[in-house]
Image (cartoon, rainbow, N blue to C red):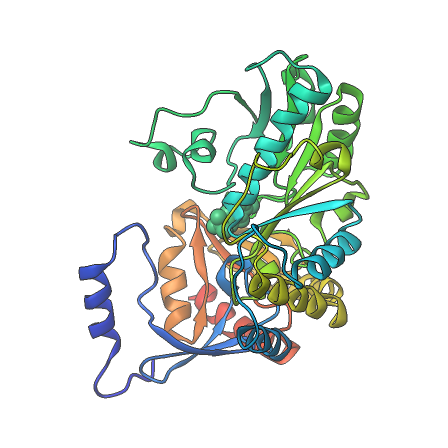
Length: 405
Ligand SMILES: *Cc1c(COP(=O)(O)O)cnc(C)c1O
């Protein structure tokens, strides 16, 4: 790496280590600037961002349209709370409903909050509409899931570390193997209100379910009057080569959860989205958020959606992702067990015999490519969807070098 003679990086690392909680294990790079697919560290080194903040930067760093909307709104109005209306939320939610094809959207901030919003919604629907006896509602989830970090959500995680020391947990969740529609059918009882699933597991290691899984899920949920809840926080808004990953199966969930890229890489914006049958169980006072639907978030969300549509980011992701995955497979690396994914959500699985994925990520960092391991053995490549072919070639050349060593 072309290090400056005096490295500022170490000072920042030392300071963060001293003053921050140690709940993350980041790569030792301190970023100070970003533009498009690129970021620069405090020592002036340039890197291509192949993680894009876990798909929260699908539009690229500081997309001009998103930044312009944010700046204009900063100069006008930023926060009212939901005690009053604001003039930005309506247009934003209208577009969100038009893009997704649902009746209503409930805006929140982080992904985990939108997941909680869907959980509360489907439970209340179960009691008020489906007629489940009080306190009996069951929600089915999958092994290896990732839906966020609240105490309720980690309670149905199957990752020991996410739960260890954080109990007691919220009851009412059942776990089935991911991608197993027969197990879903077998787990359903008269008290089942929802099935919460990632159409493709991101944090779980970029795991693609068997072909036709979501089609069967849709059939089973409809037949048993169980709400199909799709967590598209990471897979949605173009990441997998379709607007939503469930579009690959031509199905429609009952409740859709979005976040991450909805904030255009600028601001936390999330939402739970559904038709009136589900959404209208919420009455004034049932649920809320001080910041959810604030005018700054709404202006940014509207611009973020606009970029995804105007720049045809799902199509770009499909085209570039297919090409990039083919190229990665063509490397024929002795270290690679499998290259998998959809669109520009790609996992390179490192063989156990070649050790964990982290040293490969460190080697990529030294060459100016930022990628992060997930689940020990998987290098995730998920660049901004605005990335160019030349930029992808740059990442590919270095991936080829690192994986061939
Ligand atoms: C990131 C993520 C979440 C949690 O979002 P936060 O904004 O970190 O709370 C939930 N579900 C999935 C699938 C995610 O990838």
